[in-house]
Length: 407
Image 1 (cartoon, helix red, strand yellow):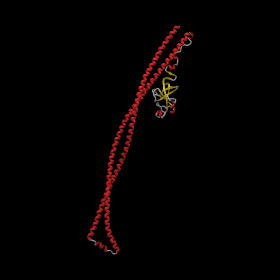
Image 2 (cartoon, one colour):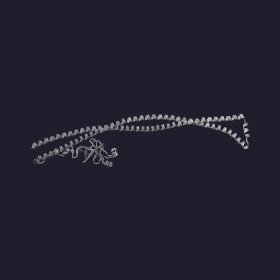
Image 3 (cartoon, one colour):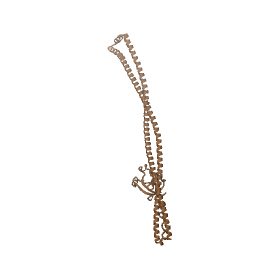
Image 4 (cartoon, one colour):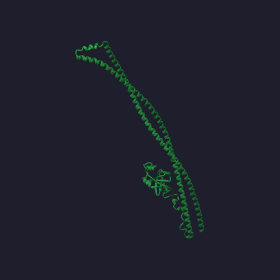
């Protein structure tokens, strides 16, 4: 029986050795494959960096186009304002020109009337002069000597003098009136010409502004077309970044799973080795004291921490050793401050974490605390834990811990 037991134990040891060799080979193979996955991760990260650089360039180009469009729209608004002012000025000049034409007609009528009066006055003077020439001075002398008294004589003399003075003054007055009217006519004509010149200048300016408005409007339409193209490019790059992010998360998750499997294989190998050593020690003790061999059978590796041997713990499936940071619902951390997560829930300390690569709503266990993945912003393998304040998030720092998937 002792020889049979020894052979059985020898066979068990050989089987265990073969199993250990297979596990180590599997672990080494997983490590090699993990390195290949790491190369894929590095390649995907480089690809994503290039895409993000292109996105930044496209975003800057889009902002530049928007800025130029805004400048052109402001310029167009200014041109439209100038156009309205020009139209108002032209309308005003048109009214002034019409008023000057009416004024000129009135002045010309006054001048014509004054010329008629002047001619009439001149004809009257000629008749009086002709009368005086034909009758000589006898009529005036007779008129003077017909006076009844000295006072009457002086009155008659004053009358004769007043008639002559009146004729002279009226002639001078009409000449002066005609001169004033002629000057006024010239002034009105000059003002009318000046208004016409202004009209011509403002009409040219209106045409110039109209051309600028048309050209600016065309440029705005071109900018709008370019902006739409740029927005499409930015959207495409964002979609590409999102796709690359998903691919990267899938690769990182795969790497973490491989690392976890390799770690599990090594741990199982170590447990098997420890079990064999324990079994060997028990067999040695049994050979020395055979009467005790039946009292305590060797422990099986399957009974040593069964939950961990299946790749899980009391907390759930082991995902790997992840990087831990913290964030809060502020502008610096999230770019907004409403506290609404990617899943639509309100971020809550002690429950909410952010991580990519696994579905929203997945529960994970970290150091005995169960969290729910409700937010995004980090790749798979990097857990961002929500805190109520920015200071608390900063104080948290950076840690690493084993993470388990609860559901």
